[in-house]
Length: 153
View 1: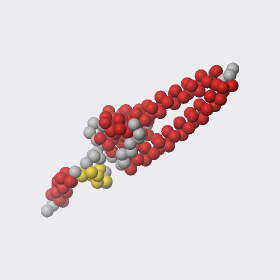
View 2: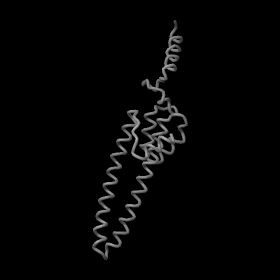
View 3: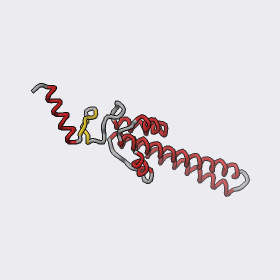
View 4: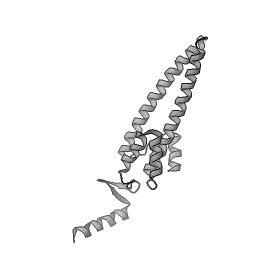
């Protein structure tokens, strides 16, 4: 038996068992090659570049559900992050302007400033967690957003 015949036999065995080789890693069917790159790396890039990365990866990837899931989750998470951040910032500005004449608005403004910082730090932690999970090849569903991402993917 030649090397070529041996490789063909191994490829047929993988097809029958639902396995595929991605780079050097053998995985179960869901992690097929993604746009010529490792699916874990592509999912990582969807998170790394925020909502824009999620959008680009989602439209470039047509077949791999794993990559599409992470792209949609990145898009939804980053969109929610920016909407809440903008709302908190606008409330902070409004209360800061009103706080020039009223002590209560100064207190509200200070609380909003702490909320802004807390929101940013929590999102930074979630962002790093999601990038590491994507690199490891894990599905990590966020509450609410993860279910919607799974539906769309």
